Length: 73
Image (cartoon, rainbow, N blue to C red; front, side):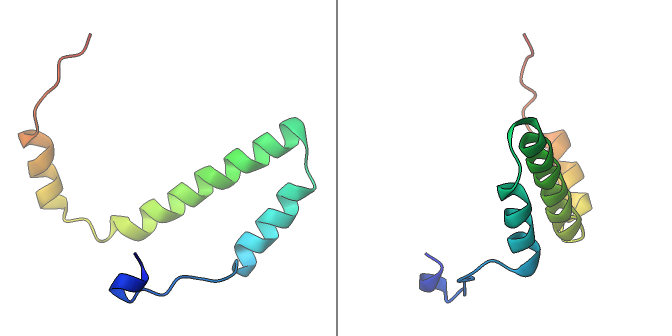
């Protein structure tokens, strides 16, 4: 799909992700779980920071109030 839209995709890991892979490869059990989860949380925070500035806050607020309210329970 990326090639259909002329979007280049990486062919290898960048340094940050290569270091993370190497670090996780040395861990086991709870140590691995803890470091993996920390990395996933950090990665999601990074994405939110990057896209947060692109969100049209006015449209988002309007969408939140206009969307259907689903009953709970």
